[in-house]
Length: 455
Ligand SMILES: [Zn+2]
Image 1 (cartoon, rainbow, N blue to C red):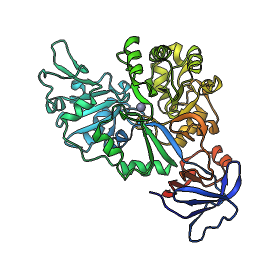
Image 2: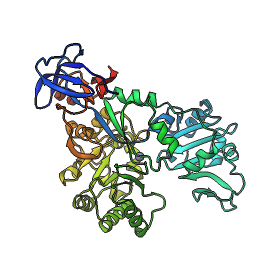
Image 3: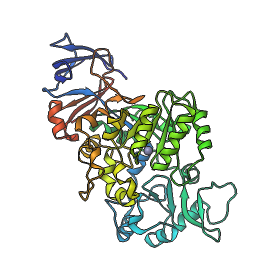
Image 4: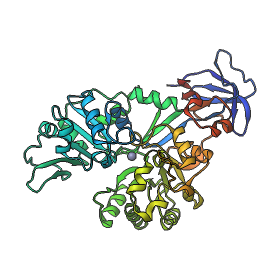
């Protein structure tokens, strides 16, 4: 919804200097010294920078809303089996279930229904691995979804032991599982929207694949105020999300067919491992790239693959918070050969690979300012360096959030006459904020000229 008549006084605008910004009908109608603005609401920016609103190029909104109703079962919050039992026992029920997220095997080893039963057995309980593709159910949970006997037509991701009994481990069975759970109360996207607004985010790309009509309706609820780009919508001008699974890789032919089947639409291919990226690069070479093709995560990229991606002209959408948040784990889990190639940023830019920034929330931190700090530090929670040559400046990391949703590594959007008034106003000039990047600097966030956050 557009508003008319707002004057943002005394803002610092890149390339212009101190100016007043007049907004009418959701667009910037003038930038200058005291433009005529009779009747307009006046906001004093007090010399703070006015930037295009930030765009998070890869997140999962419904999972973010759901994560607000879950307990965290992995590091850094939960690190031992005892802590896992404690958080699961203390959890509130959602739709009759205890729901845990963010599990990692460093907490209590490979999880199955028996391990979970020891932690909590009285109510159905399900815990998601932090990678997002695995759910583990306790015995009460398995009974609740009808998995105590062999059921016809069940998906291949349901893991069974040698005797055919379900182990509780369900790989990539989200849709199947959802059909068997009582509908939870609708996720509160308004709360997610408000949190993002407080970071200065005015647009997001939801990277969840294959969104059904129910999910699409939720995502388009009016309580979500930011602009939306959806990679999981079947008919869209945005790239189509493709998952190259980490636990069972497709054949090259299958991937070629999948990518080719999406054309002329661009694709956004999830690649976390080195081998997944090798496969994806080979498939893109065979099919040919189109404008907008992108690699999500690119978590392990040795130099030959950096050059290959530059040659293909594909964009990387990275998550700068992850080496900081989860780096200790990555360093332990990575093959020795892969450690110096984890979560590249600087080497991609140097080779001319366009890079967009994102959170992958709820798996990464939704706070872009945390991510900007992490991109400049490349330090884990315990202080270890993660591929330190991949550090970039705070300004370079910020640029990854200032690009167009359909061109995440492209030119930075501008605060200019005629553009949509999707704006972020900081409490100081940009150079000062970049010296101490923090969400506390965000004073106002506007979408289409409407204030959606006041700090
Ligand atoms: Zn993701």
